[in-house]
Structure formats: C-alpha cells, structure tokens
Length: 108
Length: 415
Image (tube, rainbow over all chains, first blue to last red; front, side):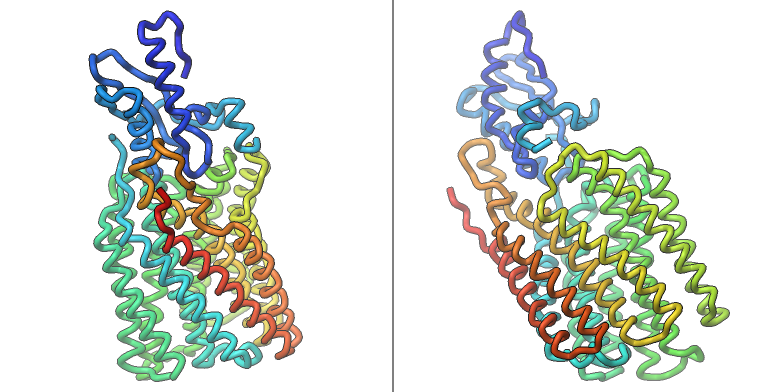
C-alpha cells in the first residue's frame, strides 16, 4: 500500500500504517504491512476508519485474530473512531506483495 | 468482519489430546508385545496395535486436523462443529472397544459394536465434509479430501464385515485376502488420498512455493484410484494373482506424480529456510517411498518380516512423521487463538511458536529417526534386542511428543 503525500488524510493514514506494524501474522511472525496484506485505509466517512485488507489464504483460522489485532492496534491512537476491517480476496495476495524487510525476516 | 469463523475448539482439540494419549499407549503396548514383531501379523495383539495406530493415533489426529483445515481448503466455514464433537465420542468409544476386543481376542458383540461406533463416527465425518464442500468450488485438492472420506467409509464397512466373520464365519473368501483389501483401502484410499490432498494445498502455503504442474495432481488422483479400485475388484472377483503388480505400479505412479508436484513446489519455493516441522514432512515422504519398495518386495518374496516392516514404514514412518510435524503447525495456533486473539496487536504477547518447546521437537526428531532405524533393523535381522531397544526409543519419542502437546494445552496466558 502506498501513501500519497497530497492525500488530505496523509498524516492520519501514516499513523495507521505505523500502528499496524505492531500487528503480526502469528504464523509467519511478520507484520501485516510488510506482508502486503493491507490494501487501503479509508477516512472518507467522518469518525470511521475502513481498513481494506486480505489474508495469506482464504479461510485462514487466524483471520479473526488478525482482524481483532488491527482494531486493537488502532484503538489507542484513534479512540473516537469506529474501526471496520473489510477482508477482500481480490486482488488475490501472493508473496510478491511482501516488502524487502518482510522477505528478510522470512529468510527469503 | 466478513470472514468465516474457525471451527469451535470442541471440534478439534479433543482429537489432538486423545491422539497423543493413544500414541503413548501404542508405544508402551508395542514394547509389551515386542515378540509380535517376529511373528505373523495376524495375531490378536498385532491387530490391536494396528488399530491403535490406524484409528486411535492416525485417524484421531487426522479428523481433528481435517476439521480445523476444512475451512482453509474449502474456503467455507465448517458445516457443523457439533457434529465434529459427536464424531469424536463415537470414534473414541469405538476405538477403545475394538482395541480391547482385539488384544484379548473376543470376537462378537464388543468387536462388532466397536466397529459400528467407528462407522457412525466416519458417517458423521462424511456428512460434515460433504456439507462443507457443497457450496465450494471443487478443486483437485478438495476432490482428494472428499474421495478419501468415502474410502474411509468403505474401509470401516469392510472392517465390520471382517469382525462379523471372525465371530460367525460366513464369508466364502479367505479372511486374510479380504483383510488385505480392508488394509489397502485404508492405506491408499483414506490415508494416502487425504494426505495427498491436504499436503498439495498446505506445503505450497508453508514454503511459499508455487507449482503450475497441477496436471500432476490430476494424474495422481487417477492413478491412485484406478490402481486401488482395480486391485480390490480383481482380488475380490478373480482372486490373488500376478496382476497385483499392475495395480501396485499404478498406485506407485500416482504417488510419484504427487511427490513430483511437491518437489516442484520445493524447488520453486521462496522461503529457503526449512523448519523442523517441514523436516518431519520430508522424513514422512521418505518413509512412504520405503513402504513402496517394501510393498514391491512383498509381491515378489513372501515373508512375514517384510509385511511387518511395511506396516512399520506406513504407520510409524509415513503417518507418524507427518503428524509430528503438522501437530505443531496447527495445535499451537488454536491454543494461541483462545488466549491471545482479543489482545493481539495491543501488547507484547507470545507467538504460537512460544507455546511449545522447539528444542524438544528437535530432540524428538533425532530420537524418532533412531527409533525407526533400530526397530526396522531388528525386524529385518530378526534380533529381539534391537527390536526392544528400538521400541524403548519409541516410548521416548511418544513421551517427548506428549509432553510438548501437554505444554501447549496447559499454556497459561502470560499477560
């Protein structure tokens, strides 16, 4: 996910991404940002943050925990926001989405 | 959140815990019955051991893992966690009845009743898997899972027919020949096809590898099933003959196609580091190749020691190694989910890998290799001392495994 500096919510989105570095995929032990699981962060609706993300596999038993992790990670920085996690399967995730830092942690 | 919920813990955890206990019982009873490794396999104690390995250990853990992984493989929620839990009690009670009635050789009500209880459990498993698959788009991996469930149903049904025949002989065919059909519909139909389907989905996920050679899996499916069906029908209607070699070859080609697919995934994998769980998987596949070679030897040379060795490589090599590895790829995650799901992302919390002792899993790996090699040599050379040393090592393997499983189960939330 790339952030645009001319985005009106650039600062908020940067804060979100920073917070989401705390959320690990428990199986791979790499955070969800470096894994490329987060596709978009949306502040369009006042008081609401919509996180559009995916999982490494559909039906992943840890999906609920990862979604909860996203909400927990953002709740301190955005206490007055309603956080919604929307899991999407298009585009399908593949390991080319993993950042250089993520690849290093995975021993690629 | 628009994702399916994982199965309830009651649908999975009882199978893992009970499987570990059965494995410990199996290793102790193998030592108690060490002399049976030098005798013909059709012996009450050997039959009891085989059923502990096949039902109490292999099928018990595989049911739990299958209920956990069905949502991953079918990309749909498990149809019913309640049915899964009920199937556990039927499997447990049926297995206990079967084992006790085999060990003390009491054909009749308990043996047949045990078989019927296992059959009910398998029917519930079939209902769950087919209902879960009903709305899913069918892929080759899913097909393997569905067909393996049907083979298990056939295996258990033939088993009950044999149990009745032991009490009230009514089959005009040789009991031992039908036993071969029962055993191989279990090995090739149930275990092999389930493992082929699950591994061809999970190994690419774990290794970050991709293979475009899906045709190999279709070939594996066709060869394994044609070989097995041909073997059963030919053996049943025409009797034992040299044609068994053709069916052996068909199944062997099916196995090689599947292993070739996994090899392609392995070669193209992005994740270079291989963890201890994947090493167990590697040994498991080597053991399967060993079992294939032994099956070939059995066709050419008759001899009980080869049959015993074949059984060892199937149950203690292939299936056990796979379970050792996969237990710690699934169980810690389920327990972690119970304790830390709601605090994930908030505080520094342990990871699933922190719930078991990885060093112990490593020591268990080497102990397991030695146990398998020493026991196999003992059987091959007909040396009771070597057999007993090998079996003592198996008890150590079982203790280490059970300790690590218990450690995961008894994990206390640390925050």
